[in-house]
Image 1 (cartoon, rainbow, N blue to C red):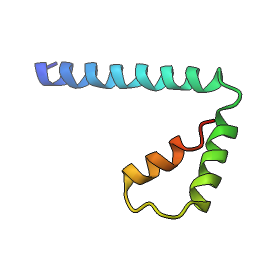
Image 2: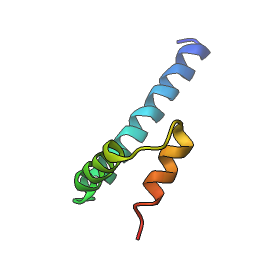
Image 3: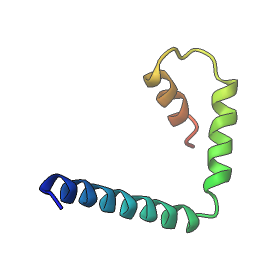
Length: 64
């Protein structure tokens, strides 16, 4: 196995670990899907943003 192969395998191993971490975090938050849906509905109804900064501003305005 070459150094390049070993480096690729290490990158692949770390990526799998990150994906597993995300899965665990997602499964431990029962409100995640509900929150995502609320944000999506809010964004669908918002007007007046034309870039990602405007979108972020609109989402932050959801906070109470």
